[in-house]
Length: 135
Image (cartoon, rainbow, N blue to C red; front, side):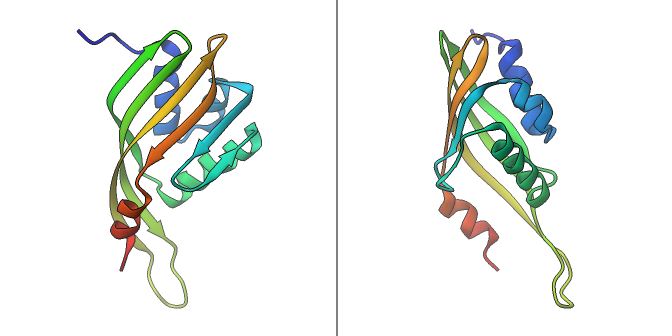
């Protein structure tokens, strides 16, 4: 029998789905390090993670992270998700805006400390996204 996610993890997932950087940052310790391994990008502080959330919301304005599984234990959580929505390429040089549907499976490996998220490593296949965005 699956248990309900903790308030922390429910808030964390909701913040990503609402593109709400403020709520997301409230879930994290001040020294939290967030790593997106597929993008080879590390956000070592709240300002860089806020910029990452804002960039994600700009490029994928309707994206949602649909939970496949969410498992928690003392000091850790794993969240398997499917990121689904549309990539929006802005209009350029007389070309209209482009919208491309995307769906990418991934997992977040999360460390917890003192009731907050202190480290996140996201794993997903960048090649899957690249193929979906190809013209």
